[in-house]
Figure (cartoon, rainbow, N blue to C red):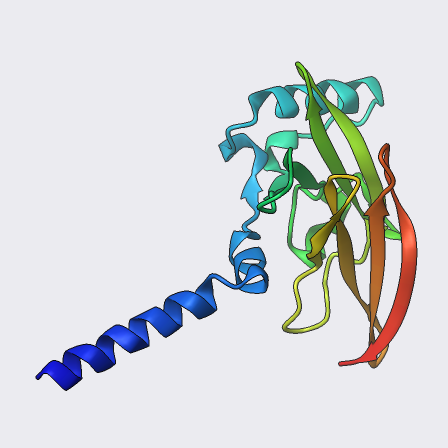
Length: 178
């Protein structure tokens, strides 16, 4: 009986250790939610006003938000998937999509408002089994670099953007086999 309890204890400890590795934490924290269901009403209001000023009336509450917060990161990065209809056959409902892909925007909070630090167009359908966005574990100027997984025929392209202190900018692109 003691051996069974010891064995179960070791199994639990090993599972907790695996689950708490930085890459596991990063994967588990990547949960998109609708902006209307997030605790970010100021960001939602700011985006709604921005889209109205640009004469692009859209329900920003249907856009999805992803909060990225690494352990040593001072402030969170909020990524916005600007698509309001996630089905491929309803692409016409997404005013921020076009031939270059769909807009992904990133924001950080500055006092009472949000500052846009990322604007990129991506194919919103990543290679099978891969997330669209993978933040790196290391920080650059206080925010993680972002790897975007994109389909390129039979290969996958990993495109990296890093924060330069004011905005995210393209750093590198690498083709990999799927």
